[in-house]
Image (tube, rainbow, N blue to C red; front, top):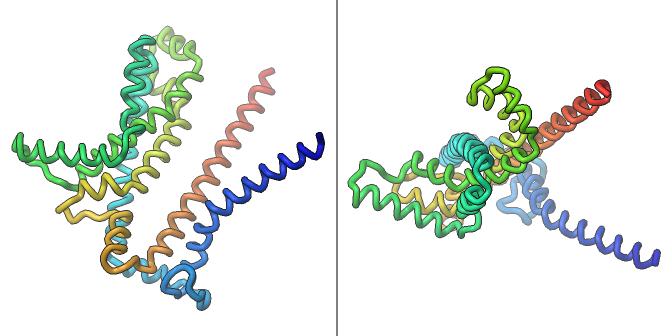
Length: 281
């Protein structure tokens, strides 16, 4: 019995190690080769240097693509967080049957193939411009709208579980004490949803940062490039510039540090809450 348990545990650890290696070895190789003058990952390392980082800030096209990516990501994530949180609160207070239907329909873009959504936005733009003769065109604003639509359901999925955990008596007590619905929303409910909203914003931003299909199809003729479309064009035409490795290392480091700080703050807050409950008891 003990042998079978130890064998099962060894298999689980072996699978976990293999998965972790598959996930992190490529990332670590990019980080390592961002400090190498080698033309591509896998070539002779050549020696430690930070020249790629200086070249990165000299590559105007890549910097412009990075700026567009961050702008689209931040703005669309902000609107997605606002819309997703509002939608989650509205759906939460619907009747059960209505809530089930609306909740299911709000997740269509999550389960739908991204290429279908991208073509849908493309055809919608053509309809607005050519059929209705509206003064619209493929632009940065249109890409932000598209990214907001596709990321809002993910914010809704993040905020909804937290809403179910809230104490409904707090909101009712706030209104009983004279606060209106809007004041109760901003002073009682939203502070309790702050953690879920931050997680939703981070998820929306990451999805926007990573998107290629919708961005590529809905930026035709606009000359707007993001990191993903820049890399795609590089692969198709002239090859990926080695400075991409330096940019990837910067993005990876920023995300890693942000996660560490966020989890440290979150754990500290939990410890303070436990201490406060212990003192009250």
